[in-house]
Length: 128
Image 1: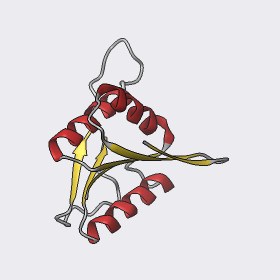
Image 2: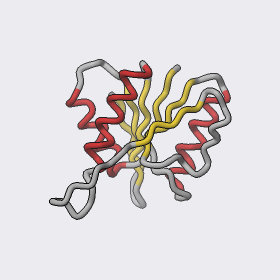
Image 3: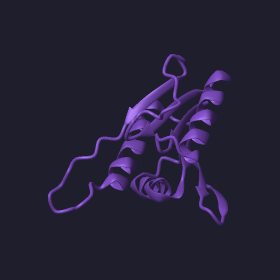
């Protein structure tokens, strides 16, 4: 399968879990595409089944913070179309799940996606 994984690239639990999941899937022969604003800390690009797609966020003087969610949704759609992804895994609720919803609204391509929403008090899984 061709699998996209959207995650935080940091040392925190979410980024580590998503990266380890992706590396394990790649070791089993799946093509894994990480989508984030920086390469995940634990990602090993030496594996031919692992690719990285950087989300570039332009600064905009009107906003105090760059509009990452919209840039992420756009990049998720670009990678989906360019790489013919079979599945998109979005790891962490904010902003990744919101970007998944935006991406779903931007296209009717019938892409299968899975998310894992994580917080201190609840873990919820959703499928489309």
